[in-house]
Length: 121
Image (cartoon, rainbow, N blue to C red):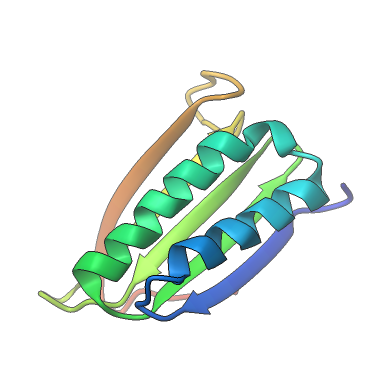
């Protein structure tokens, strides 16, 4: 893979959105040759998108970044219960900065100011 594979999609707060997100993640994993990461990546993606559909009830943005050593899926909703934007990320593979190795999956939730910048997108 010469560089990262990046895909972004915006989904409605609908029952079909988790399946659409899983389909996009699956396609990127296939393209990147990272099929071994599929079970964890699809499960965690489904959980995060489902949470957005049920709790935020807003559009959901999904960003998928695959590199040779793993995949990062960022799920963002646009709910505004307070002036913060919550971004949830799922990383599967060896992209873990702690060096725990392949097959490790984790989620990270960050709160940032609503003036969050999407530079570089």
